[in-house]
Length: 169
Image (tube, rainbow, N blue to C red; front, side, top):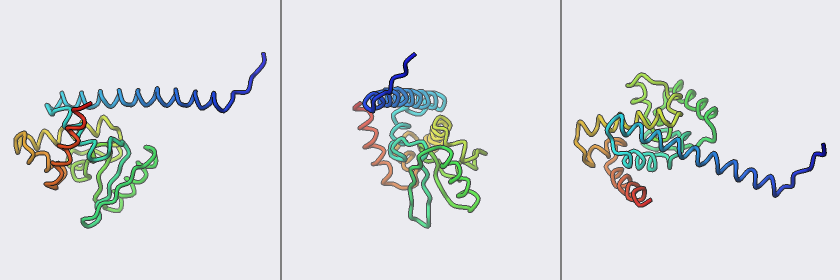
């Protein structure tokens, strides 16, 4: 049997197909996560997507460190490095947000979870929906409830803009 050398162009095509397959697969998985969380907690799926879009641009390994009113965002390349980073932040007592919907460490602790668990996009989206459900129950389905997810009144306008963009698609 003769083994032929594969050209760089063929490798490029194979890689492109591989990435396309896994990108679509990842998008389909995220869609299932949003749908499940929306149904479980009775929160509009588009609102959950808009929150994730504003919070992390839909990036599952995003970490935001809150330093005395100044925020520093990190878009970490993989789960292992993100896990090590948030473990360090937790040990040092930092205030930080984790994952696709940027769940704050205070809420993570309130629900008895580990921040590393919330690098799983489905768990993160589900907790986001649960928090949003609490806010809606407390403040009604209003922009008051939405801005309180982040703690900044300007946040509601960002979510509204993202919501409009998502609904157009």
